[in-house]
Image 1 (tube, helix red, strand yellow):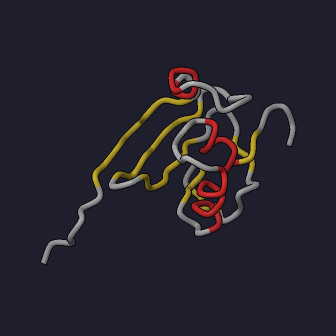
Image 2: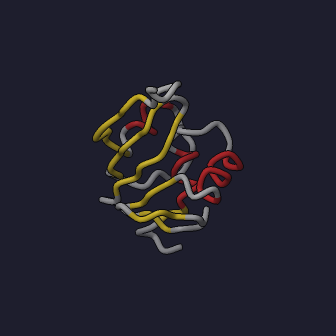
Length: 97
């Protein structure tokens, strides 16, 4: 990876969206993450500043824009400064009949 990009699984882990890097890699490999509108199935897919990520987290769909690339998994305030939430929608637990 170049200095202007970071692996998708690392970003999700560094930014504290998932507790382990393995969980982040699984989410990517399952095709459950979109980077700027395209489905990504590789944990090693590069992400850059300005990319918009869409992915499920617990009972929500997160939509975030990357503001900076973290260099480590630091404290939560440091992680939160690397992105901005664009939207967060609740996933219904039971589909309507």
